[in-house]
Length: 368
Image 1: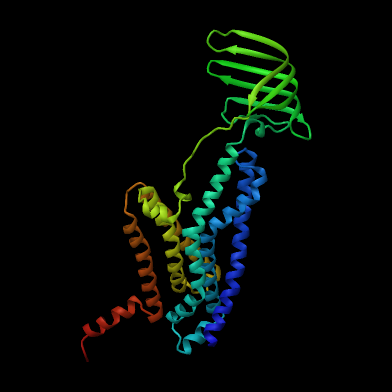
Image 2: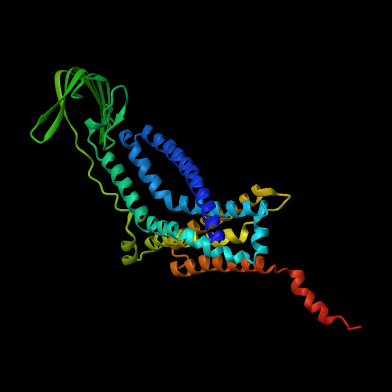
């Protein structure tokens, strides 16, 4: 049918262009944030691309929802501005008739959004958390970088080497500052090398000195050595535990703690919001000759941001047991759908307060 095919074709072009723009913006923001974390030593610089990929996949449910909403609003607004809506209305197509072809176009995207929010979102968060934890567990020797002060995994030592060899096992101008209980020590040496003895790794220093200070009695001792070995390479064994964002949706269902229910409500909320936003887009799409298309699009973006912030607010309330998950989902998404359908019915039937009051006035006026 001409009506359906022309609408879906334009929606496809608009959705593709909007998706590319949004993904580019999000990737740029994630790249800047990841580079900042890498410069602080929070993430492995060699894993920046992988972290970016996981982050983009994790944010795809919100990106796809926003791209679908903007494409529907933009397409219908363009049809209003070019008077195509007048032609379809004259042909007997009301505003509610757009819901059918829009849903037929949007259902694959809505299905992908639901799968991404329920399955891909926790998987990407788990992968990101594992990569960060593995980077934090690296040994002291792995943390040393030439020309930089590096803190050990336990936070008790600070290492510095001027430069190292090609194999990464020897270095020059080594500096080590350590703190253990009430004692602080500063060790410097001209050269140093890594040796493995049994299951342990040792940093062997040559031609240097060590300065020990006791914090209680302020005793100061200076040692000079020809060769000195200190054990390095112990990784910190810790377990942060799996956060709610990294837990599977099935785990959230089987373990209904407030924190898990809040996370599950957010995932379900994104999928339901994508459906409601299609209806909202049909209801709000219009063009005012004075405001132009930009004014309508700004209002639509404002409605999207309010809806998304309400979902995030609901997650916080559910996590703190202020509201129940089922009650919030029904209240927010049910009321959003009801208001969108009521608004759509008003525009479809051209309801107005004056039209509703005019029959009463006519009935109250005396006949002549």
